[in-house]
Amino acid sequence: MVKKENSFDPARILELLWRVGAKPSRTGLSVDAIVDAAIELADAHGLEYVSMRNVAEHLGVGAMSLYTHVPGREELADLMIDRSLAGLYSHVDEPSSVAGGWRPALRFVAERNWSLYQRHSWLLETEGARPVLGPHTNHKYEAELRPLVETGLTDIEIDSVLTLVLTHVSGTARALAGVARVKEQSGMTDAQWWSATAPILERVMDRERFPVSSRVGTAAAASYDAASDPVHAYRFGLECILDGVEALMSRCQPADRSSASE
Image (cartoon, rainbow, N blue to C red; front, side):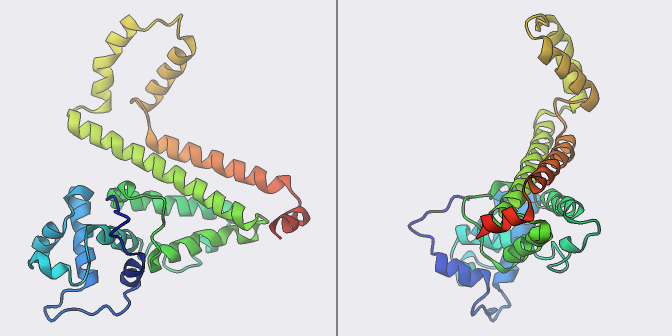
């Protein structure tokens, strides 16, 4: 959903996100009911299926009745994103309460986000440069930052570490969704695709010209039984990121970090 800057009212969307002055109509129609219906449609049919008309039909009301509560599709997208995050954490200290310190806590955060994308894969199509500043988004951000507060990292480093973890999760989740989409469109499993491709590749691939890629590609294909394994990439990459964060923490003494944050 691409926003048109000349028609999108930031003040209005903030009021909607925080339900400022929101009231149900005489028929019981409300912002929450509209957003929940839109999420149901997106989960079932994908984001492109979500239109004001389709949401209205899903609710059994006229399309024009929706505009009393939600100005348009662009605003609805932000409302859907924020609403989908409700209940991601039972309380704001849930990640920081994970036993073992910041590393298990960040694994916990990564797993929650990974699972979120499996439930609502359409979220992978909505990521933009500007955050959705709703209550559930803010609750999520606060909860995910807290495990890093006592690590000695500066505020900018804390934000950067969290961004790195979340970007890795969304990237590998997007790859997993892509694999599923290709399987559906082609009607072939990865094993079937490799079975059809391998004999031809064996004939045309010059192993003397491409010795490293031949060796590594063969090993990866044998291990994954596919061209790639996004789940492996997610778990392997996450541990590499956490190792890097640990190295970052160990490079500077607390005194150095306190002066850097001033």
